[in-house]
Length: 337
Image (cartoon, rainbow, N blue to C red):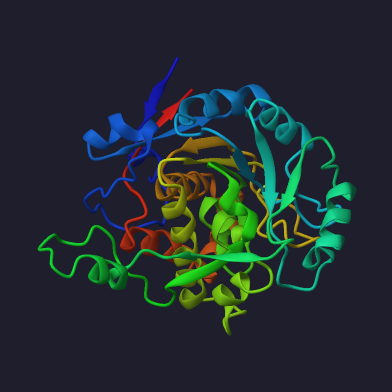
């Protein structure tokens, strides 16, 4: 049985205050009913199992057709907080024509080269399905929809632009083979992040699809420590990917092993927040907002470390800037399965 959980209940103990702006909507198939009410739908289950995953996926997969890339963070060698392989195998085997997709990294790591990345995949047990290192054979450029493009194509039109230009990037380099996929399933281990505060669906596609040779450098530039500039570049890169796939992209966030550190840290801190559940949506802003809300709704001793990590890195700016760029809807209806 489904039941709707009030966002007021979720936010009772939350420090989030982004404001109730009008919904932009993402046009996702699974959110059509919610969008008519000014909200989109985010599905939730406490059942962190293959069965729970498949329940969620069945509600958000309407646009997943043709060849499917499953964007997953496969982690550093022997990463301590990675999602269990059973949760990855169980989902991937039910997604027709699917391949796990990754890109090489920008920081010192075995995963900085394709050879080392492939060895890490073997070490971490990813030998049960195809894995595509998308920038192994180079990169392509995805444009970030913005005012410049609108003016160039609509100079003689009185129509108003349907998108907003980013402040920093006009394009981003992504792994070359990303172009060959018809659809993208963004399967994310939600956790903290040393620069972004938290890593959700946005971080998974923005940093994760950017090529190791150039794309990740475009996003990070000189902002390695942390801060809004890095966050805004990350959001802009994410918009390039969402714009490319349109309605053929969907999102799952797994709130398990919620360390303050990303899976890119091979020695990540032990989680101090209890496992929460699985979320799914066709709206990237809604699912990341709902994931943050659920963390903030935990008892003080459970949420303390994650909240400190998020707020010390201005992490909530990810959500604000996604809203600015009209990447989705921060007003949502949480439906428990």
